[in-house]
Length: 329
Image (tube, rainbow, N blue to C red; front, side, top):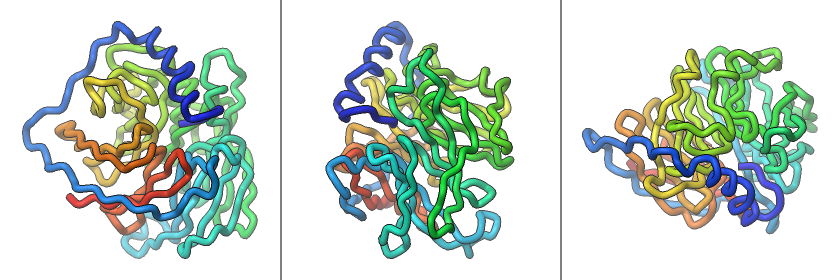
């Protein structure tokens, strides 16, 4: 989730006000079925990396890697990258936890390694960029994660509040933009306008999109799963890549109460893990919509799976600490 000012202002300010005005009459979506539901995992949490400062807000995180997914089990974990939105930097840490680079980026959001091996960073992830009519100054930058001194260059422009990002198997980039909605960008850095016009939009509520500000996004097979920052039910959307107009409800994480969701990750082809800024993480079993919520003690911003460790996660927090989360399923 992007930030502008204090965390309290971010949660209780214009986003919530806009939501109340726009979706007060929207019906709550369907809930999970009770058949064939897996048991909820046990969750344990430790602090992997303390907050560097009171304003160290860890907005997003990812790993780069040696090799590619096509190389199979020989792929090894590389560096951990953390976006510090208040600090306007993206940091690189080696496997020993030593910081090896700090790259200036204005209000960084998601960090993701692309199919070309470069690291992509959302820039402009601040609520000042959220509202329609504001200048579209958001960008996606990219850089060489292996460089001794990485330098970010512009890959795509014309975005509003770029927050979450994900690549599909064809190398196209999808951006969860808190202003524009879900946006697709081709491999040349051009916005795919026809596709993006059909995708879920910000401040355009419906029976499916019962909230505002698309936030996290992940690709699972031929679908996108997208969180809404604020919604009546803590909603996660399923957006078919081949037909974004056919968006449906994947899960309601906090129903029947409203929810404050941030980024998400896919553990496997059927399991999502969602960050809640109210201090929990949620696992979702996609076939059954089974939702399990566990407290972790701090508002969570983003989640990444540790390479080669299916049930080990790192989680970013609003306070700036990085949490080590273990799921026992």
